[in-house]
Structures are given as C-alpha cells and as structure tokens.
Image 1 (cartoon, rainbow, N blue to C red):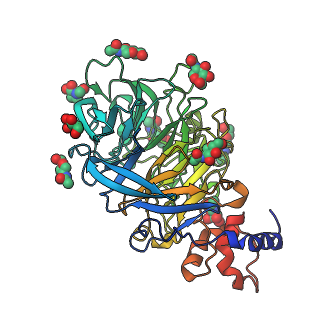
Image 2 (cartoon, protein in one colour):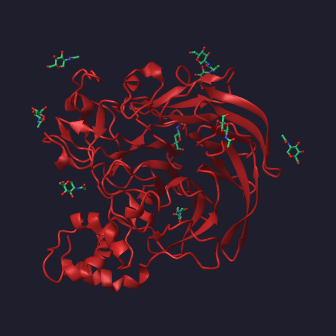
Image 3 (spheres, rainbow, N blue to C red):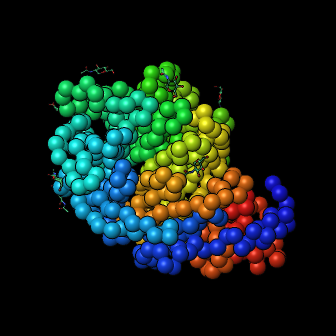
Length: 489
Ligand SMILES: *[C@@H]1O[C@H](CO)[C@@H](O)[C@H](O)[C@H]1NC(C)=O
Ligand SMILES: *[C@@H]1O[C@H](CO)[C@@H](O)[C@H](O)[C@H]1NC(C)=O
Ligand SMILES: *[C@@H]1O[C@H](CO)[C@@H](O)[C@H](O)[C@H]1NC(C)=O
Ligand SMILES: *[C@@H]1O[C@H](CO)[C@@H](O)[C@H](O)[C@H]1NC(C)=O
Ligand SMILES: *[C@@H]1O[C@H](CO)[C@@H](O)[C@H](O)[C@H]1NC(C)=O
Ligand SMILES: *[C@@H]1O[C@H](CO)[C@@H](O)[C@H](O)[C@H]1NC(C)=O
Ligand SMILES: *[C@@H]1O[C@H](CO)[C@@H](O)[C@H](O)[C@H]1NC(C)=O
Ligand SMILES: *[C@@H]1O[C@H](CO)[C@@H](O)[C@H](O)[C@H]1NC(C)=O
Ligand SMILES: *[C@@H]1O[C@H](CO)[C@@H](O)[C@H](O)[C@H]1NC(C)=O
C-alpha cells in the first residue's frame, strides 16, 4: 500500500474532481425526499421519471420508449422520452398491459414486436406495437412458479441463440431445503425454447437447466462477445457456522457463470452451485475453522435438526460450482448488464437489511475482458467499483434510492430504476472520462464525496477498516477526508 502521506497528497490533488453529486439544476426533477446521490468522478445523473409504482425491470424499445414494470400496480407502462440539450424528460405515459401482477422480468424480441414480462406465477408474451404502445395476443409461456418468497422471475432473451428465453427463479425461504431437490424447480435458472413450443412450459419439469443450487440469482446477462451467461446472486442471511454468528460480513454475494446457450459446451453447465448447504466466503477471518478457506471459497454452515444437511462439509462444498467473483455480503445484486463491447458489467445493488451498517444501495461496474472473462480474480475484494451511490448509507433504506433494473441506451447512458423511491435515474459518463479502477475505489464502503459534513463522515466506518493509517494526533482533523481516502485506495 502507498504511504499515508502519498495517499493524502494524491487525494488532495484530486479534490476538485470529487464533489457531492449535482444534477444539472435545469435538468429534471430533484431526487425524491432526502435522497442525496453521489457519483464517481466523470459521471453525472439526472432524474428522468418520478411517481412510478415500485419500478423494477426496465428497457428501451425500438421506438425509444422507456418500458417499465411497475410492480406496485402489476403493469408494464410506456413512457415517451424527449431530449433537449442532453436533458431527458418524459413526454406521455400510458399503460401497455392491464394489471397482471407483473412484478419484475421484462424482455423484448430483437425485432421489437414481441414483449415478455413475468409475474410470480407466469411468464407472458404479447405482440407489441411500439408506435401505439399497446399489446395484443397474450400468451402464457411458462407457468407453475408461484412460491412464498423470492417471487421475481427475471427474463433474458439470448442474442447468440435466438429463440431461447432464460428465466431465473429463487428459493422460497432464506434457507429452502426443497432447493436441494432438482424436481422442486427452486433456486434454478432455466432456458426455454420459444421456437418449437407446443404447450405452456412447466418451470419445474421443462426447459434446459443452466444451473441449480443458486439461491436467488435475480440478475442475468449474456456476454456480447463469448455468449457466456452470467448471473448475480443474493446470498443468505443470518448464517451461523460452528455455533458462531457469521452473518455480518458473510456470505458473499456472487457473480456466477452458467455456460453458453449456442451449443458451446461447458462442463459446469446445469451444475450445482451448493445452495442450500454451501455459501461463499467474503470475510474469511470471521469464519471459524477457516484454515482451508479463502475469499470466494464455498463453506458449509451448521447442520441443524431442521436442515438434516447430511453433514455436508467444506470438502463437499469445495466440489460444487464456485462463484466467478464475489461481492460484499448483503448488498443484494438485482441486475447485470454488459456494455456493447463486453468490457464492462454494470451491477445494481439494492441494499442490505441484515447488517448493522447498511451496504449496497448503489450501481457499480465490474471490468471484463472482451473474451468474456472478468478481469479480477475470484478472490478479489474490489471487483465491483462504485459509480452511482447514496451519499450517506446511514440514511438507508428510507432516505436512499434503491437501484433495481438498468437499460443502456445507444449512447452508453444507463437508465436505472429505483423501486423504493418510484424513480428512474439516468447516469451519464462525460466523454473522455473512464470508469473507476480498483486503485481508485474501495469495495464495500459508501461512495466517497468531498463533503466534510457530519453525514459524509458517517459513511467512513468501512473506510476506517480499510485504511490502516495510524489514528494518531493529527489524523483526527482529517476524519472528514476518510471517505475521500477510501476512494483513493
Ligand atoms: C392487481 O391485481 C392483483 C391480483 O388480482 C391484485 O391483488 C392487486 O390489488 C391489483 N393491483 C392494483 C393496483 O389494482
Ligand atoms: C393498438 O393501437 C392501435 C392504434 O391506436 C390500434 O389500431 C390497435 O387496435 C391497438 N391494439 C390493441 C390490442 O389495443
Ligand atoms: C425443442 O427443441 C429442443 C432443442 O432445441 C428439444 O430439446 C426439445 O425437445 C424440442 N421440443 C419440442 C416440443 O419439440
Ligand atoms: C402445473 O402443475 C400442476 C400440478 O403439478 C399440473 O397439473 C399442471 O399441468 C401444471 N401446469 C403447467 C402449465 O404445466
Ligand atoms: C457460440 O458463440 C461463440 C461466440 O460468438 C462462438 O465463438 C462459438 O463458436 C459459438 N459456438 C457454437 C457451437 O456455435
Ligand atoms: C473482516 O473482519 C475483520 C474482523 O472482524 C475486520 O477487521 C475486517 O475489517 C473485515 N474485513 C472485511 C473485508 O469485511
Ligand atoms: C484442510 O483440508 C485438509 C485436507 O482435506 C484437512 O486434512 C484439514 O483438516 C483441513 N483443515 C481445516 C482447518 O479444515
Ligand atoms: C451426521 O453426523 C452425526 C454426528 O456424527 C450422525 O449422528 C448422523 O447420523 C450424520 N447424519 C448423516 C445423514 O450422515
Ligand atoms: C462500453 O464500451 C465502450 C467501448 O469500449 C465504451 O466506449 C463505453 O463507454 C462502455 N460503456 C457503456 C455503458 O456503454
């Protein structure tokens, strides 16, 4: 690590470029309530839409309309967008579907003429008219998915294997023992063939299984180069191991690789990722009996009379499919989208509840190689670099945006829905600016800002853990710069 004085000099030098995020005052409404976004250097935001009813999945149709699953009303709505001097506003809004309890998934065929959306029970399709923004010819594609918990069914239409629709389905509980049985259909990701379909597919018994033992992989994306399918997983809460409560910083959230859809073989395709018995390590030092564990290793949890886990051990867990990358515990990743070149994977983190200091509540970026592999290693603690965050996570969840779905427009700008605040934001990168690198951000701390206000220093708790600078006299006066220093690490 660089010496403290070098870091301090570097951070002071870059002070002007890090500031509390401001949307251009003339552009769009203010964030709702007391929400205070903060942004990585070179990025800006504006609010595009407000007053939506728990917006989840979003996309841009071929006519440039923003389609939104408003889960609070069970509908897909369409919003025309107008742009003037780089400022995007909503023109007219209308409902595309009736209330069909649609709550998350949405996809559009590449010709723009078939719309798909999901409820907890079913995946539907319609003929879609982008000019009229209405639908006809409703069909049920996949059914029999209703469960008590984790009711989102994310949809992805493959570009590399046209006609395959990927559907993700989570567990019915934090630890769902049914997920250990393949026939339950719980905690699985499957692909369904739209081209030769004769009946309504039953999720449990039909489809090509891409993976199982995947607790709740809400986000799914296909790498535009390799065609590899990646998911982001929400891992478990309240875990104990060997009688020790390890939930604060374990288990890690995950980026998983599920193989290809176009026929390229991959030995792990359809494989078991370990849930409900195995979880990925984030903070190894807080796990008892950690001699064989590193960041990203799968570890076993306590057997209990409830779970009858048949004494599955770390050795068993090491045999299951492991995550490609891990993220800080409890951040709740909900969407992943690759940019056109496949060098960036954008991930939304909805935010934690099972942790003393809230984490997540932000949109981050992970670097990929064009061949479809992440740049960082599976043991990295800094793979996700924060771009769009809340200034003060101590105000979360109530005073924060909670990002869910993303849509990248042809200019590379990113629309982000926030269900809790009923908003859609638009995040833009200044031309010439670049995404943050590992050395300029810290994983797991709130995004840094130059503000020295009391609220900003509340975000520095995580930073204090990461910076090993002495807390000697003189350091105290720099406390307001801690978030800034975290940014520099
Ligand atoms: C949408 O439909 C569901 C199921 O019928 C119903 O429970 C819910 O109240 C409806 N929502 C609205 C906003 O009407
Ligand atoms: C969609 O709108 C067009 C144009 O207004 C109309 O002709 C068509 O009947 C509508 N379709 C449905 C299903 O409402
Ligand atoms: C549809 O095609 C897939 C292979 O792409 C095949 O496995 C499946 O059996 C076919 N289903 C029907 C109903 O023909
Ligand atoms: C749903 O499950 C029920 C009971 O298992 C079965 O009778 C029915 O055919 C299934 N529906 C579909 C669409 O597969
Ligand atoms: C699948 O797509 C990838 C990327 O376009 C290509 O390299 C590979 O050859 C394809 N595999 C098959 C079996 O067509
Ligand atoms: C891991 O836990 C130790 C001990 O509680 C703590 O000092 C450290 O900051 C934690 N690191 C991470 C990355 O959570
Ligand atoms: C680590 O693995 C080795 C080989 O399987 C085993 O002998 C040893 O007991 C393990 N150590 C711990 C701390 O689990
Ligand atoms: C698990 O281990 C306990 C204690 O060694 C033993 O009593 C029990 O039979 C084992 N259960 C299974 C399913 O192997
Ligand atoms: C994706 O990649 C292209 C080319 O490398 C880059 O210019 C662009 O800014 C990236 N990001 C997005 C969100 O499109």
